[in-house]
Image 1 (tube, rainbow, N blue to C red):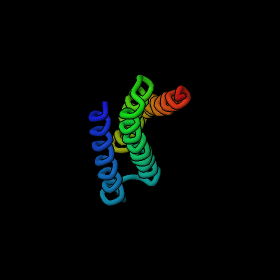
Image 2: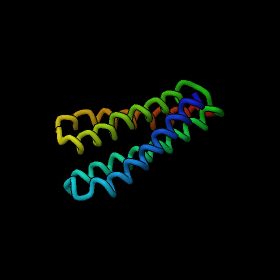
Image 3: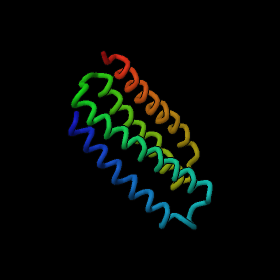
Image 4: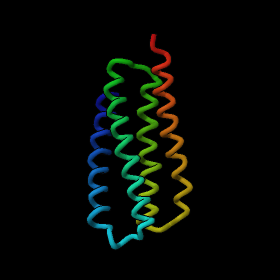
Length: 123
């Protein structure tokens, strides 16, 4: 899982920085302040959880197990659902896409819970 999680972290890190720059330079004046703030929230959560995914990749080499693996999977799914839905919402204006966002948030929470449980089980 090390390679998979590191590649996902690299991909999400690259796209997070690119989307942040795109929002700052390409979307200013094209989106309302409210939509820019929503887009920025997506970028922030993507980059924070990219670092978490990177940490999980490194942790998985020293603490193998299902909980650490599930933490990484949940972080990746959370980025796609949470940040992805916010990006699509701001670019299309389809407000019904906002129903997907909480599922991404739940995936983030599940990832942190798995990480916490893995730490709890350490002797």
